[in-house]
Length: 430
Ligand code: GLU
Image (cartoon, rainbow, N blue to C red; front, side, top):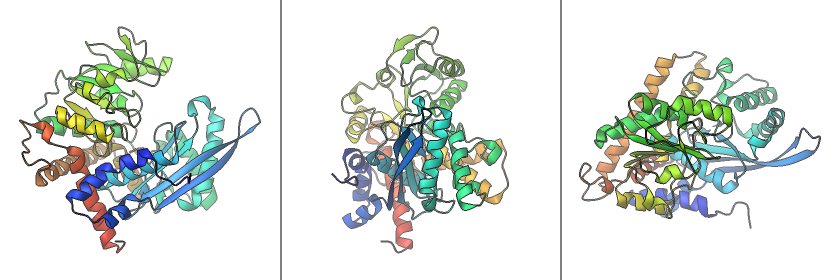
C-alpha cells in the first residue's frame, strides 16, 4: 500500500469540506484542489538513545494549503502519529486559520514516538534531527511550526536553534510558542483555552445558556484544558469531571481547577484527586453536565457514545474529537457544538501575534495580546453565526426554539472554504 493512500481518518475529516462545498455549489475538481495537501514530507530521524543504541524515528510535515499565506500548524509527538493523521491535522489548520482570518495556510507535523518514555536529552536530539531534516522546507515565509500534543516551548527552542545554525540567521518567526526569553509572546501559553473561553461566552449569549453554576466536564486535562477550566471557574461554572490518559476524577460539587492542575503535576494524573470519585478517561464525555469540553485526541465522540452525551453545549478544544456520524447524532439531539476549527483557534491566533511581534522586533503587553485575541475570536464566532443564518442551514432555522437545527460546523466550513477558494482564485491556482 502506498504511504500516500488516503485512509479513513483523512477521508472522514474531509466530509464537512464536501458538505460545505456542496452548499457553495463548488465544482468537484475545485473541491479536490482545496482538499489535497500541497506537499507531504516523510523523514527518517536516527537518534542516539541514552543507552548508546541508535533508534530511527519517522517524522512528517504536511503543508496542506498555502493560498492564504505560509503553512502554519503544530508538531505532534505521540505514538499514534501517522501520515493519515498529520494530513487531517494539516487540513484542519487550513480551515482554522481561514475561519479566524489570520494570513496563513495550514500545515502540521509529527513524529511517531512516545515522549513520556524519552529523556530530555533524547527529546532534544530527536527534535534537532527533525528540524535538520525539514529545514529546507520551512521558514517564516514558508511554513511555521508550533507545539501540539506532546510538544512544548522547550522543544520549540531546540527547533529554532537548529534552524538558526543551519541558515546562519536569527529568525524567531520560524517557529511560535517559544519561551519568552527567545521571542515568545506573552499570553501564548493559555491562548487555546482563552480563545475557547471567548467563543463560549459568545455562544452562551447567543443561545441563552446560563453560565453561572453551569456544570463543566473536560476530557484531557492538559495545557489546553487547564486554562479554560480556570476561566470558566472564575465566572461561576463548576468543574464536575476531568480526565487524562491515566484516569479521571468526578465530584458533582465541583473541583478547583488550580488544585486539580497541582495534583496532576505531582502525581502525573488527575486520578485520585482528594474528595473525588474515580472515573475513566472517557467517562467525562457522557457524564451529566451542561458544558462538555473534549480536549484530548481525535475520534473520541463516535456513533457508539454520541447518543449518551448529556451536555447542552460542547466546546471542542481537541482537533477532530467528533466523527461525522457522531456529529449528526448530536445535531439531532440538540447539542450545540462549537467546532474544533473555531473553538480551538485561540492558540494559533496568538502564534500569529507572536510571529508579527518577531517580525517587527517590538513586543506587546499581556493586555494588548488578550484584547486582540478576544476581538479575533468574538468576530469569528459572529461571522460563523451570520453564515449559519445566511445559508439557512435548515430552512426552519430558529435559534432559540430549535437549537438542533443549527449546525455551526457546516457554517464554519462554509466561511473558511469561501476564504480559501477566493485566495486560490485570486492567485490563479484554480
Ligand atoms: N497545535 C495548535 C493547534 O492545533 C497550535 C498551532 C499553532 O500555534 O501554530 O491549533
